[in-house]
Length: 81
Ligand SMILES: [Zn+2]
View (cartoon, rainbow, N blue to C red):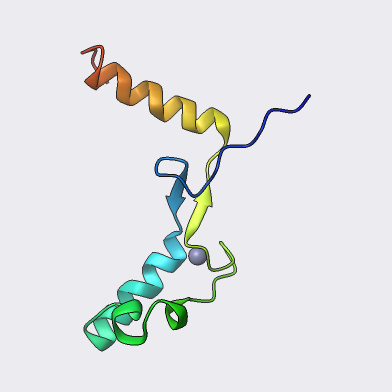
């Protein structure tokens, strides 16, 4: 039986799409505010071939576990990073 994939919309289960970040930074540089502030949430969607406009790049289960353990080492167990 295959394990369920983690919800990639949850905090820590994705990286922000660098292409969308660049587009948003350019928009703010040009217009002085974010696309959602200028047009509202519905029209703020940015076309992106990397993430299909979601703004999220899902992480693999192994990467989520690796990052979680790295944070626990430092903040929970007090071990060096
Ligand atoms: Zn994107």
